[in-house]
Each structure stands twice: as structure tokens, then as C-alpha cells.
Image (cartoon, rainbow, N blue to C red; front, top):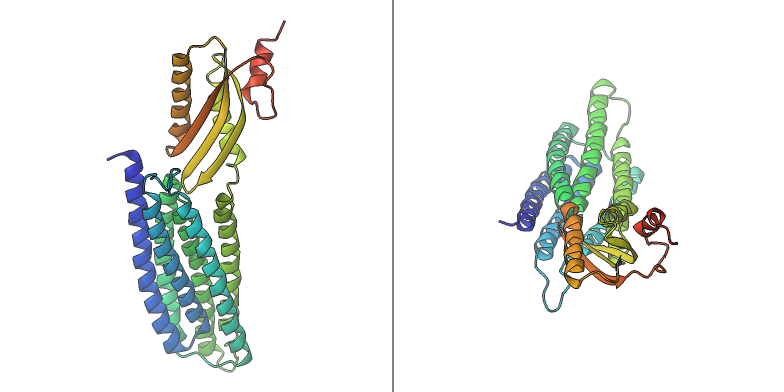
Length: 320
């Protein structure tokens, strides 16, 4: 089994785990939320419902993105993951709007909760399960550099915090009803739901920025480009430098192209070997990197802002 194939299998497996766990939690939260009349628990059910949709989308995305390039998609299907992350963010915004509406309505027309202790238990279950599943999603998402899995992980990690907050709120209501029966604490439930909505909106914004930018072919982060520059510099003095570097990302696939400057007298065979060695160095850190190199004879004039090691080479070998 190849390294890349193993990554895709891991991604699909943990995505399916997320689907199963979210389905179970949605069922529990809906039942308990309706039985005790808690808008915060129902809002958490909706939150988990959105997470379920996101998990399904993530599962489909990692399956689709694993397909090799074809005639219609010569650069592969990596951007399916970015598209799925953007769709997930939109769904989160919609869910947050519904939660805010229901919470405000309950603040205006309050009603007491029935057996808030059941809500505490289901929120505790949600907190523990989502923490475990999100941990695995982050682990595999970082190992495989999967945008879809990391987006799903952030969904569930947000659910951990919101479930814990709702659990604390319901716990306060439960204890307050027993210790201070004359004090009205029902307002805590919708306020907790509003806090859930605010956290959800923040998560949706972060996810939108992460997923949508890659759809616009924004360049790779500076630290990644610097890593590529350093790898090229390792081939001095055979390589005189480089310029016109362009980078972008689609899902877990990185695309890098640049002009490689070599001695005009270098043989085609040696230049070809150097190109392959540079590609191998890139893929050692990012296995799914697609590298395109244009070999160009160095005449001492190709100095540009992104020429990288070229200036360092000239410093070592100044012109007469």
C-alpha cells in the first residue's frame, strides 16, 4: 500500500467515525432538549446537526479528493476539500442565526425547564465524545494535511466548548432550583444558547478564511515558501539560483513552479537529475506536492525580488 493511499484510507476512516458520533449525539440532544424544553440543548442539537452535515460533506470530500487526475481535472480533485470547507462554513452561519432567533424568543417568553439534570448528562456525553473524535480528526487531518478533516475537527472542538458551557448553565439551573427555589434562573438557558451562537459564528468565520482563500489560489504561507527556497539553495553551486516562483494549494496538494538558473554549459542530463533531486526534497516534507521547473541558463542578469539563493551565490563568487 503506497504512502498516499494509506493517507486517503486514514482520512476516510476518521471521517466516517465523525459521521457516526454526530448522528448519535444529534438523536440524544433532540430527544432530551424537547423533553425538558431547553433551548440551549436544542441549539446544541442543531449545532451537532450542522456538524453531522459537515462530517458527511468531509467524508464525501476526502473520497472525492483521493481520485487521481483525469482528462477533465488534470490538476487533480484537491479543491473539493476547500469547497466542502466553504459549504460547511455557510451552514454554520445559518445554524447560528436560527439559534439566536430561538434564544431571543425564549428570553422574551421564558418558561421553566423540566428535569435540567438530563440536559447536564447529555451535554457531558457530548463534551467527552466530541473531544475524543475531534482529537483524532486533528491528528489525522494534520498528518495528511486535509482541509476537510481539519474543518470537521474545528466544528467538533467548538462543540466541546459549547456543550461544556451549556452543561454548566443547566447545572447552575438545577442546583439553583434546589438551593434557591425562589430565584428565577431560567434566563441562563437562552443566554447560554446565545454564547453558543457567538462561538459558532467565530468558528464559521475562521473556517471561511481558511477554505475560501485556497479557492482563490492564494500563495502558500511564507514559512513553506522559505522551506522550498532553502531546499533549492542546498544544490549550490551547481544551481546558480531561481526566480519567478509561484505557489498555490488545493486541498492537501501543493503546486510550485519556478525558473531554475544553471550554468549554460551544464548538460541536459545533469540538469534533469538536479530537477528530480529538488522535487524529491520538496516531497520529503509535503508528499503530494506538484513541482514544475523551467531550466534557464544563468547569464548573470536574472536578479529578481524572489531570486532567493542567487544573491548568496553571487556574494560567494563575485563578478570580476
